Image (cartoon, rainbow, N blue to C red; front, side, top):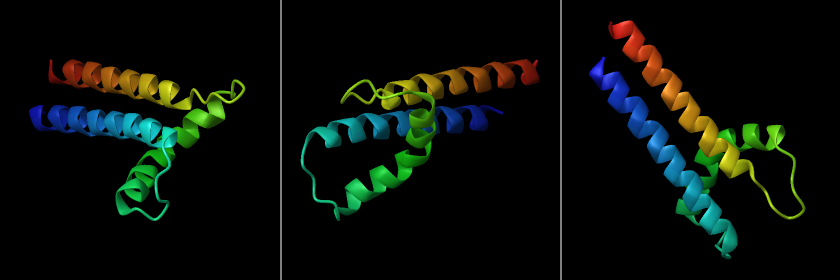
Length: 88
């Protein structure tokens, strides 16, 4: 059970870091065929697409990364709660 908890924690933490890196990459001009940029975009697209469907754009500001990070933190808390409840 401990392994599952650590895996979920690291997975969500890495995904949040990739979302933050993607936000910073959107501020700078990066080559579109860069392998690292492509990996970050491909990895974060599923989560951000869900958040984009939920949140409207506010002018030129896209708040979907904020909603995605909050959602991932809520999912992490829920999974930890369930794992703690199951282990009792």
